[in-house]
Every structure is written in C-alpha cells, then in structure tokens.
Length: 298
Image (cartoon, rainbow, N blue to C red; front, side, top):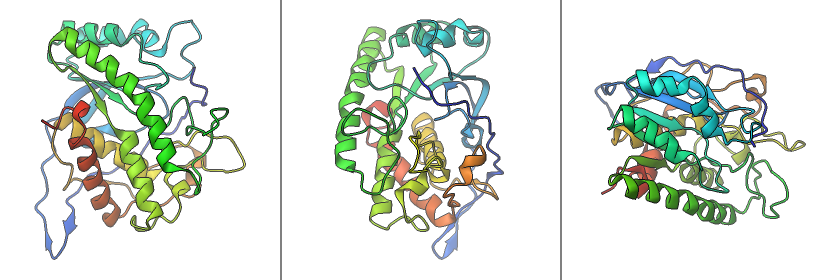
C-alpha cells in the first residue's frame, strides 16, 4: 500500500514556447492534436502538467490511501465513478501513473478490457516510476532511502530491471490475448537514471547534486524522492515521446518559478533553463524510442 501523504499543490506552467539553439532560431513547433487522457496515479504523477504536452485530463484520480479495502489501487479506481468516464467519454489514453514493481498489476486486465470495450483504439500506458513502493530501492531491502550522492546506480538499475521484467511479462500476456499491442510501458525510470548519471558526470548544467533532482531530499528523514523540476520536465517529454511517437525536441515547458508542488518543493530547487530543456528532450527521445514496450521503436 502506498503511504506517502497527499500532495496538494498544483503545478503552474505558462505553455509552449519555441526553443532557440545554436546560431539560428528554430521555427515554433506546432503543438500536437490534443488527446484525452484518464490519468490514474499518485504524487509521482498526478500533479504533472500533462496538458502542456497536449494530453488533456478530463478525469484525474489520485490513488493515495487506496488498498485499504483489500483491493489493489487499479481495482479501486475502477470501482470509483471513473469507470463511467471510460464508458461515456472519448478517452484516447489511459495513463497509470505509478506502477508498483514488486508484482504485476493484478487488475490490469480488467482496466484494459473496460477501456477497449468502449473505445477499441484506446491505448493504456504504464509509467515505470523511478522508485518502487515509495522511495529508492535500498540495497538491504529493509528501508526506503532518499537519493544519495554515493548511491550505487548500477545496483539500483539492476533491481529496477528485475522488477520491471515482471511488469513486461504481464503486458506481453495481455497484448497476446488481445492480438495487438494496446498496453505500453513508459521507461521513465531509465530516463531518470540516465539523468542522474549526467549529474554525476557534471554534464547537466546547473545541477551539482543528484539530490537536487528531487524535492523531498532531506537526508535526515526517510522520504520518498518525489520529482523535482528536472524530473517533472523529463517525465513530460517522455510522455510526449511515447504517446505521440515523436521527438519532443523543439517543444519547451516554461514556468517563471520552476515546477514544484507543496512548500517542501523549494528544498534544493534548481530552475530548468534552455540548456537543460535541450538535454532532457534529447534524453527522453533516446530512452523512449529505443525501448520496445513504449511502442515507438520498430
């Protein structure tokens, strides 16, 4: 069961702007046709500004405190009035914003069948989060830990891949039953890991510590590594890349005061500048386009 407190902040963003690079300014890139998305998730995704990459969310369901009824959070989501959303609304995409990696999502079949019954071309995306069960995977498997500068990134990546394999097996099972690829995985964890490696190599301008990528980075507490500014922006570019199957290069999310939610978000906050946007756009496309379960690569 997810135990993090409900995050109440709302992200404030200004919209799309052209990005100038090199010696010549690029022409503004047209925003894609908006898709309607039912977004089910928690504080690892629900506050994210999906609308700024063309993904309108007429229905958003937070899953905080789900699981107490004996059902998992996907089942509870369907039990809410959101099943009505799938029945009556033209939902193009279902985005499950946080997938516990310890085991496949038991109710995923039910979610998929309801969505496709009312819109056969609906696509279901699972966000492979950069944490499992809340917080980073700890080598001793005994507690959750915050991102630390001395983390063994290779060991964390290996654990993510092992757990993700169970999720991929479940997706394979469903898609085989359907006879088509309707369920996809967005490899956000891999993208975040690559960003952490850039920080270690001092190749992400303006960010000097891995902990600056997360807003609850108080090393005196056992916190949940929620997304900081750069993680939020990277997540949006990954979503755009996977769902629209095109590079986000040339788009730019913009906000005068960064991307954050809640008073704790100011901790270690690093604004996202043009140089970082360019790097994160490229990183998102490289990660998503090479991962078969994202549905972009051939």
